[in-house]
Length: 424
Image 1 (spheres, rainbow, N blue to C red):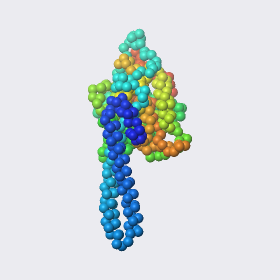
Image 2: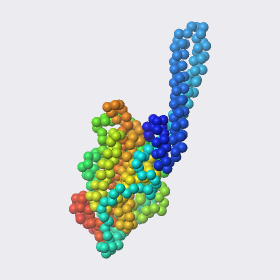
Image 3: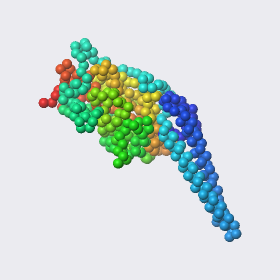
Image 4: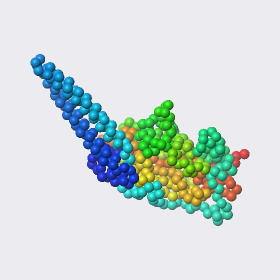
């Protein structure tokens, strides 16, 4: 949710932001009208309430002769006050409903365009030349099956399409990645947290996942709860309806949880292997900070992602996402795309978003500053989404015989194992 004052003070900026996102500019016109109706309704209600108070005083002082007429007038006025109150509530609800539909305005310098209009900010590392090495790279699923690391067939048998089982060295590799990611986050000053994967609708709506992303979330109607697609949801709702001490900011949290996504609209895309699945585990970073510090914190989150990927030795690109491809909550977003040898291209493995005050306003998270109480800013960043990072490791460090060289930083978390081979 944005600051409602912007509807009155700078609607043109909101129109520009909507146009950049390729979203409805008419929504701003509807909000301007709804805000005017809301304020007019409030003014009318308050005027009637003031009149009602004055009439109440007059009744108290009235003589027996004038009192009946005043009481009749008071009853008529009470009906008008009740009607005005109901009208005000309807106007408030309409304004709030429209306001909740409005995405976070993008920063002015975000690239304008759609999914394919991202800007590559930098390329780090050089992909291996498998041709020069004399063999064609296998894809992650073939490698996973050779290693006894990935079982898609039984994952499908258990749960359906886009589910999998990590077995043997595959399971060990995920656990190693988890421990390494957690240790790095703690090293960087993030407070580790294990958070619920089931949340209330207020948490999902507050983080912005019941808008344009609603079709991609799993809902349990019998419990009125949602399965999270990222621990960002629980981490954001952690301080909902609280007033924080501004001197404690920034608060940096690291969450680990299973994540569930319906992958709506992805029919026929990435159906092979574990790149696009309905369930996966992920280590997520989350930050609460002062609004004026959010852009600096965003760069820090991106630096953490780059550090982590670089430490594993995976070639990757850093992209700034275009305005039309941003989620509801993000004012700016960076993605890191890792190199996939079998596909000969870079694919998304991490992202980090600056959500400014958008989520905190929806979740009522504020801080007590020197000049009063106001919203905080929130940011999130993927540190390690397990299936995609496993893909990166299997494909980029594969050997001719189907074994996989373990990145040195992971070896201490794999009992010193230097190469992934099938467990005996």
